[in-house]
Every structure is written in C-alpha cells, then in structure tokens.
Image 1: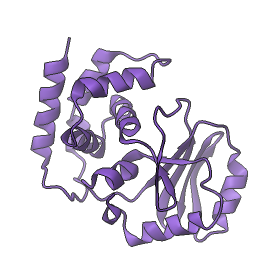
Image 2: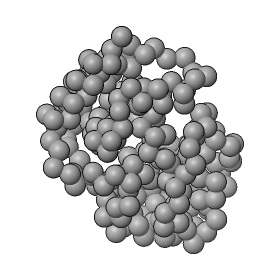
Image 3: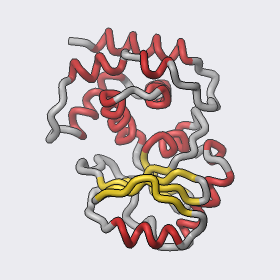
Image 4: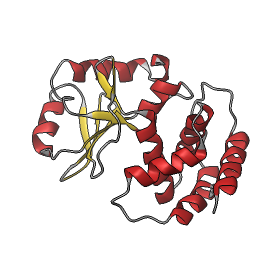
Length: 206
C-alpha cells in the first residue's frame, strides 16, 4: 500500500469517519483507492460505493456532526459533500463489485480489477485525464488489455454498452488534453500514457 498518495488532511477525515460506524458497508473505489494500491499519483477525493440502498438524510446529518460540512449535491442514493474541505461522495452502485474489498487503515478498498472496469465506463462517459492515467497505471502494474476488456464485459454484463464506443473513448483525448496533470508519483508522462492506450486499443480492436 501507498499511504503517501493521500494528504494528511484527507487521512484526518478518514480517521474521523473511522471513529464512527458510518463506513460500515461502504467500499472506497475511484482514483484514490486505486492510487493507494498502485502508488502512481496523489489523490484526495474519497468516493464510497455500496450496492445496497441507503437513506441519504441520516448519513448527511451524521457527517455534519464530524466537522466543517457542506453538501454539494444530494438525491436518492447519492450524496456529494465536503468534510473539512475534503470532497466525499457516497453512491449506491447499481452494479455489484466482482471481488472482495481490501481492508486498509479503517477503509475497505475496491479491488483494482473492479476499479479498472469502472474507469473504462467513466472514460466512455467523458474521459478525464486522471481516468486515462489510472488505466495506464493498472496496465503498467501487469494487467493485460484483453483481460481489462473482459472484466468490463463481466462486470457490466447486465448493462447495455457498445464495445466499439468503449474503444473509441479510450483513445479520445481532446477533453483530457485541456486538463492539468495530477501530481504524479511515478515518472510516467502524458505522451507515454496516450501512446500506450492507443497501441493497446488498436491491437485489441476486432
């Protein structure tokens, strides 16, 4: 694990959450959970998911008692907020996780395979630079591109998606080009990330 990817103020929020039972049943996914396991970049946001239903108002009230609190958006099964200036997201996931989470310092981290599949779907919606960076880090850690695409098809087997659209999304960088690089802990640069993803998608394409 790589605790340095998360700044001290974010670990302080994790500690506050861990002093309660608020995180019971919640799985940390997204870029922070991946970075904690791969160590490729700094990440601050805490994105929590669960497959079961939950009531938003009680969660909001409990979080408000832990420190400086602000709601950014709220809807059934969704809470976007900030606690002591750290962005938190709590989401009900329609799709269950394939693999058991990894316990770490009071958190339950989604398996990197689940996160990678989620990142592919995120890129298909709108490719943020950090999503491409995270997928590259997953591949650099030893995963194969065919296995990644098989994971997506397995995890989202009950969801309609177009494989060719996914491939096009994985090599569409126009939006990402305008975004700043996150603080990297690996020496990988953006041109290298682009080239690797372009090569993998081209080689795998039917």
